[in-house]
Image (cartoon, rainbow, N blue to C red; front, side):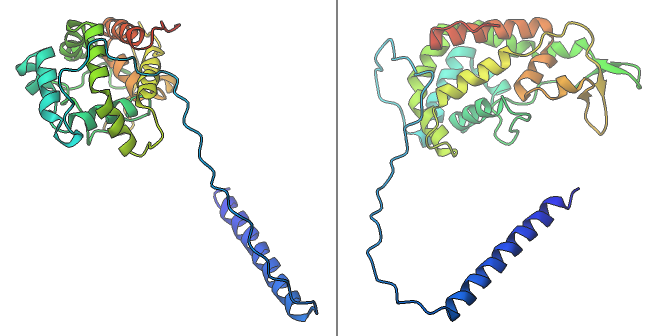
Amino acid sequence: MKYAIPVVIVLVLGSLAGGFYYWRTQQRVAVAPAPVASSPPAVVPVTPPKPQIHYPVPKPVVPMAKPLPPLAKSDAAMKNVLTGFFGPGSVEELFVPRDIVHRFVVLVDSLPHRKLSMRFRLFKSVAGRFLASGSEDSPVLDPDNYQRYTPYVLMAQAVSSKTLVATYIRFYPLLQQEYKSMGYPHGYFNDRVVAAIDNMLATPNVTGPIKLIRPNVLYQFADPKLEALSAGQKVLLRMGPENAARIKAKLEAIRGDLTGQVPKR
């Protein structure tokens, strides 16, 4: 079966080539009057329709005191925002404080996919190593792993959703500019943000032990349904049910402040 598609392609191309050769032969032997030259039909340019925006970004509640910096020089401003939220120690410990706008946009865009982009990650690696418990033949996710994510959960809970959304709205033009430059010239980044939030809110609640397998070096979820989840959903599972519940609550609040809608779960 693996050769079926190439064979079909060869047959189709062969048929087209044969038909083209037959048409050229008939053109040589047939006697017909010379064609009358005519002007080609006028080509009317077609303007592509504007993309439909599902979740327009709200207008800023407070007008900006000064203009945004250029995208290429936005790291200082973004780092000041992160420092104001979480403190200088947490920023240096947990974040990669360069190309922040690009890393944030890449993170949001990749969350609903199967894998996160590690090359342009916004956060540094979670402290500690991954732990599995149980027998070697039947390992499970060790609950001690959940503590590795606690600093991120506490950091997320420390800032109100309204403050986060207000800051996001302020810097949204830079985020939209970066999103378009990444290969989405007609895309709307805020729609992608809401889609990523909805995807993570749809993460199943798993309360019992999560079985693992180790086909290679890295562990995977033994349940194919869990292994098929998106990268963002898998992160929530690795956090543990309590941490995941806290993050979901924060995401629901952010979504409500951003869209005026409460998602149905």
